[in-house]
Image 1 (tube, protein in one colour):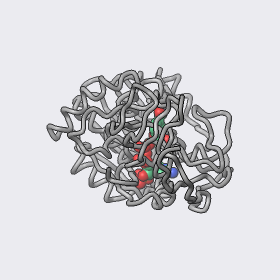
Image 2: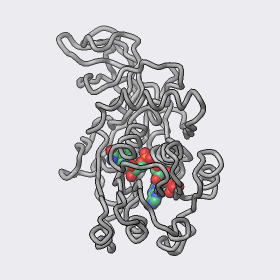
Image 3: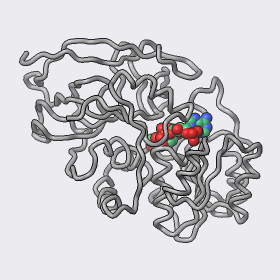
Image 4: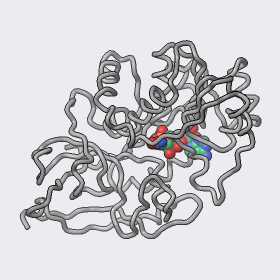
Length: 344
Ligand code: NAP
């Protein structure tokens, strides 16, 4: 059995149907765990350092067979992306003390059977927590959705919804680096100011203060939108459709305004897809992970040269994770939501 430790874990209590998640949907337990990989297993045992709190967690708390990813199993630790240190390995891919990022558990230590899905962290001259966001799944999502799906060109007009989220802040900066005009929407004055003053967006607006989203977009895009990076869906998407230019592209990344609704809102302006010859393409980051080395090649120099900025919202301790999950849906997080479980 080898060395045993106490392992604090956060589990899904039971499936939730509709509505916002509550802290009481997640329960904490302490169980015993071996720090050694069982004989014959190709998995790895890790110590979790940083956990990424992402909107898909809500999605997986409901029982669904329509998703692109499995629902959680009640009574099991909640699966999240994270950065972890390898303590024992049953695969030649990783050795003790390697740092990795990928799917792990909302717990102090995890035994990961599917070690092949993890990425080894090769560049440690940036903060390790960046691999939960900027250099991890959200960063790859921004890269794939913007460059591969939206196929942007210099000088185009780009709109990013939920622009201060982990993904949105990066998409806007990619668009500026390419020479586009970029506008973002976010849910507070603080976020709007940061988008304009820290992240270099040309304009930003608080969607919560706009009575008419179609008019708001018209104000910022009198000549229309070429590329929309869509994170929100619902009323925002309806307003976007009206404001798109002919041959525009909508990269459908997420629909966070819909995840807690009993019934998804209808979209009324789909005719614009036809009349304007729009390309409206959904994508899932899993299909683009083969581009991760190319993504790093682009982004690491930008980070080191200070050409890409990044903001995290850090919650201390595993026990802060349930509240952090809820916070995503009220916009409490100012930047990428990270939970620090341990600092090595
Ligand atoms: P994030 O950093 O966690 O940001 C979540 C933000 O969404 C909140 O801070 C809040 O900011 C905003 N929000 C919450 N409820 C909202 C509502 N009802 N209407 C408008 N905005 C709302 O999110 P992220 O990681 O950047 O993810 C962005 C989107 O991408 C999500 O929809 C997510 O599901 C999706 N996603 C897709 C993929 C993929 O492969 N396609 C991968 C990862 C994530 P405000 O203060 O601005 O309201």
